[in-house]
Length: 161
Image (cartoon, rainbow, N blue to C red; front, side, top):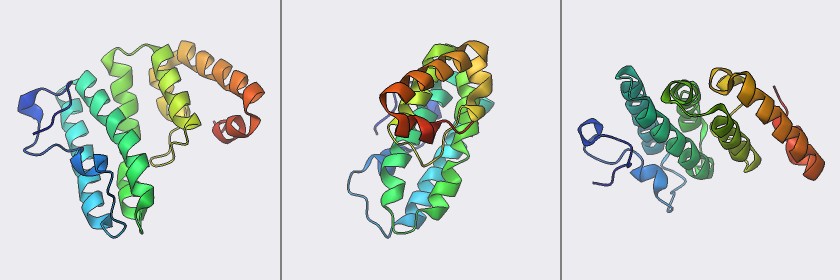
């Protein structure tokens, strides 16, 4: 069994919840399987959050968000797994706020994910407002302004909230 280093062994399901999403051999007609995997991940993050295992919830949600964006868009019908994945964003944002991540770290991760083309699930600074706080929001805005000078197209795409 492969495990995330931040997850206590007693909270892990029998199989690695990220295994299917980490599989580089995405098969376009496996939308139902991917939907179930994403749903399981959402439940796992909810369970960790319910136990106030914020660092574990944050780490699992963050990794899932990145992997989902790499695999789900390759499916012939990404709609259902993408819709399930949207539930990870508020869970991840809450875990960021409660886990002790610094606002600057949240801002840096969010802007990096967005600049790298993160689309499924969609991320926004508004969704992470609590985790960013005033300090992180200011850092995010300043970084977005700097990005605008370097890459106006990417900055315009990110400047949605």
